[in-house]
Length: 271
Image (tube, rainbow, N blue to C red; front, top):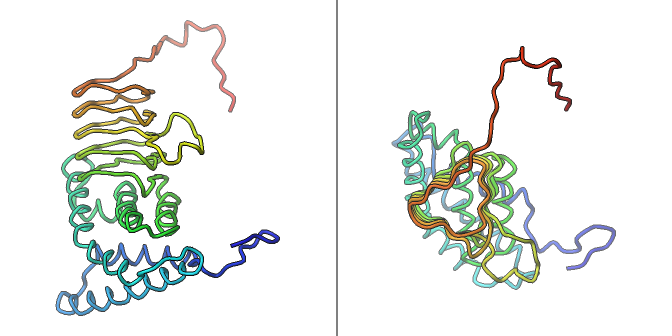
């Protein structure tokens, strides 16, 4: 593959829209809105066959540039994984329903929660990543990033259930390891201490053990950093060292409240 005048001189990659359409239709397939249960099974089987053909077209597009082999085997393995993907996602959704007082039904979580949408895209992309499909997992994760504001690398390892509440600004790096029943809030970064190309093959991102809660706008960095099980990381914390199990990590900003009458001049904020 070479570049001339900014154009990629190869047709051996799928169009981005083709991958995004596949991902959206796959999510609709996993969580359909059923209007007629009598015809559901027939339509379900036809839809899976159509999705299988879509995936094969995408995989065949990689053949020349990436020397991808065994496209049908990859497709079969992916679709064999779908029941487990759906089972895991239902656990994710039920955990959100049980934990979030604003959630009124499983349908609300599945259809409206951006955190659940981002995790759905991640679980699909992660399986494709494990099957060593090039580009496609990142296309799916970046599509989810663009519509939810949540950036989860498909290479990350995330247990079940996993909950992201609100979610805007969440970043989870490629070599992150996250355990079961972990919940994180908006603005959380699980990232690397430094961006160095020579560290591409090493663990750069933290390990978050089971039953941890990370509150809004906290940053946890480093491949050797481990957040022990059942810990709570409070909001706005900056963590670069390991934390023992059952820890409470927080910082207390100093906030001063005075009567406006005590000021001779008002505070004027210019943005």
